[in-house]
Length: 99
Image (cartoon, rainbow, N blue to C red; front, side):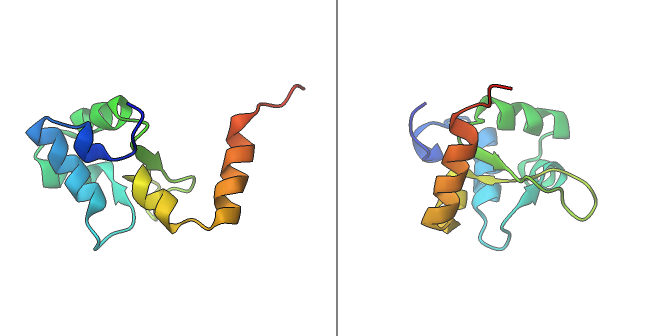
């Protein structure tokens, strides 16, 4: 899975509903609960899908107002970032410290 375009990877109709909900332009970030409601899947199944396609999904560093994790599709997240933010992300995740 080397592409960030979920449409070329996700084939299961139930999983597709999750990614369509993640791409919904009405929201920038989505909770597991919202994804479960829109997909008709249980929250546990939604989490399994998000974990299965972890390269296609971005979890927010900050929780939502209710403390829940927030998610979006990786491609949208990267489109919205400035080149400086992208560079900082790359530097902060590409090499570990040696302390």
